[in-house]
Length: 186
Image (cartoon, rainbow, N blue to C red):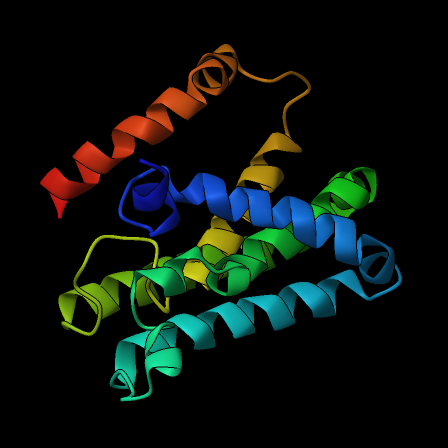
């Protein structure tokens, strides 16, 4: 089981990525606190987009070490997921400031969410990225905009809706079941 999980061949591989986030936090949180959050999020989204794009559009090299990034082991590295770590880090550090100011960016977030969704759909319909999974070059910007959209929506509510609390109570189980749905949808 552990070799399957650590090799990226099971749905639980993302737990290993989350453990890498703990290590990244331990190693870099003091450094990240002193950086511009918006620039760091933008850079990390760009980096993750390029990382997944390289894996998608550039053929796997002959070198066994470089080829490793194109195989399942490439999923396991935090590199493709860096934008989620950076976004999570800064939203955690600056949560109050984010929520106090997020309404100022309503149109940017709404338009960004719509454009990133349209880009995702275009890539699927045009055949550029036809698989249903998180390891696509268009996903980092899409997920970032959807997360910001959820923060924006939550700024308009005083209390967390009960259905969100219900989903939250079962989120890990939902995560474990999503593999079966994604395979059927894909």
